[in-house]
Image 1 (cartoon, rainbow, N blue to C red):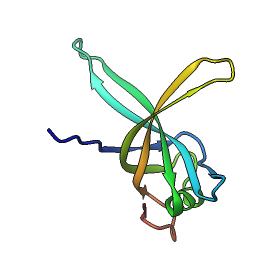
Image 2 (image 1 turned 90 degrees about the vertical axis):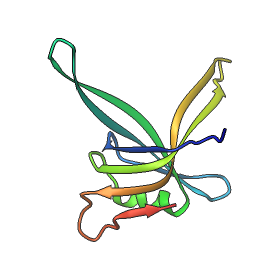
Image 3 (image 1 turned 60 degrees about the horizontal axis):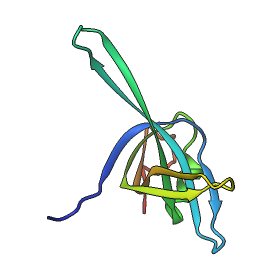
Length: 119
């Protein structure tokens, strides 16, 4: 059986993107996306649930995201799910799931901004 790892999300940025560079000079941009889900309970009550996901964009796409996205921007992200693990200076093991962006599309972008940032 073949494996498949594809994530498609639409949400709003919870903070301004952070652009940094690796020691080798490769641009990397991190931002958090809030994705909302509305549902009705068995009792008929409407509820909202929010999921916060960290997005990582690389190369030219990272620079484009940092330039055009800001807190509150509505964004579509296509990518793959990745888990990172590390150890804190105190020796505690930590891990985190994040989405590595393959395509970022700016929804409702300001005039003059590109519609999407391809990887």
